[in-house]
Length: 229
Ligand SMILES: *Cc1c(COP(=O)(O)O)cnc(C)c1O
Image (cartoon, rainbow, N blue to C red):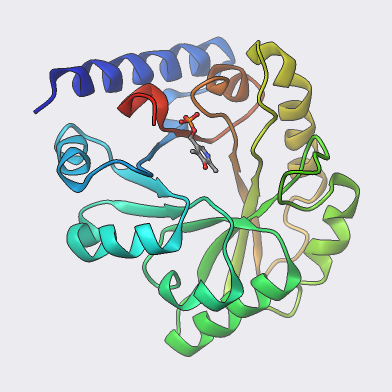
């Protein structure tokens, strides 16, 4: 086993704990999602042995290959753009789909979930800085988006996710994380039957401490754990 991996995990957990305490929250309320894209299966198994419980993949094909080898030894999160025709490979096998960015996609997740008789937990991805290159719902369309999913009975809308801009200093993203938190509060439990806005998935290797200070409940970390890709 690569000794660096244990060091990295310890260091990331330490920083998560510090950021949580700094903002008056409990460290155990923050979920570390280890982003394993491009990471090989042996290294992932080592990570699981070292206590990583939640893994995030951004491509369905890669998720599929790894899921077939690792299975339910951990909880899987789909964090990347999801095409409607690939929903079948994801539903029933993931803990949470973070990247729902269209009505069509949400409806297809609902449809496939109904077929399998499961409820799929999803997050709505928000293009919080309104970047042209990013997926996600624009901040002022969120309410309307949530409303249009009222009739979906086999999804549970569990909160929001964003990929913040790539910035030099993490402080530059604080305003976006703060806005995410406001959006979450604004839309909290809009419908009894299929909303439960518990989670804010935001913060990556570069900026997770600031994200936690602003209310992140899930951080998605790749580089700081596994090295640069
Ligand atoms: C790659 C990726 C991450 C992790 O990024 P790092 O900077 O390596 O921590 C988080 N979220 C998404 C959606 C990603 O694609």
